[in-house]
Image 1 (cartoon, rainbow, N blue to C red):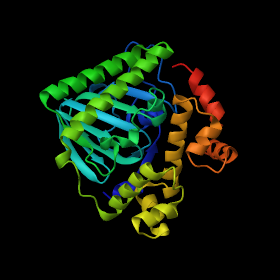
Image 2: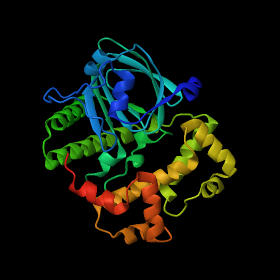
Image 3: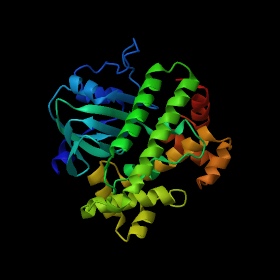
Length: 321
């Protein structure tokens, strides 16, 4: 699917998603809501039925995009044909499929009778919930070297559909901070139940990736394991027995971003988790992440996020929905 490399556009948040795919980008998917959709750019979750999306699709097909967030789609009726990464799949009823953050994606066809649920969310939204929760990149279905789908039995499909429905209901009706916390908890339950099903089918779940895609997947897996101790692309090139320039060029060709951005993103995600979910001092977090000192950590964090670690901690601890 080389055409994706040349034509993809970045879709970063719910508003971008609606602008790209829907005839009414201001549309709210919550029937109980009287307000139109907000232009929220971070800390978001959006859930809709596939029937709603199908009615609002502005095209029959859509060229390649790179989603900068996580997606989960449950198909309970009808069929779809989509490209995820470098493979094109046709899914029918009983399929649950996933589009990891920064993954290439294109929609080729949705049948008129399509039904199910579509949920997107970013890492910040997921972070604002449980202390010591599983990290998003650790879920196997969000790893680029795993198959991005599972087939559900009728019992599993009913369970997962019920969780999507409850997640959507709670998300649409939330009014207080505790309501929003409940939504995040339901998201965690959905992910955990999905992981159980995914792992039970693990035996037949490793796709054959082209060499370049396999190198990028291996690089990302290493970053998720060693980001505290290794912060340079050259470190990972040594682990992978490749030239640093070759590694960086390959990662940029496949993902659209330099290799260093994935190391930085992993560090920032962990820093955010520590800031939100724990009571460790800024200096303690800097030490935990193996920064030379607190000042260097604070400069790095602000460069990546636009705010200082303390501003981020205070803002997210006191913000409501």
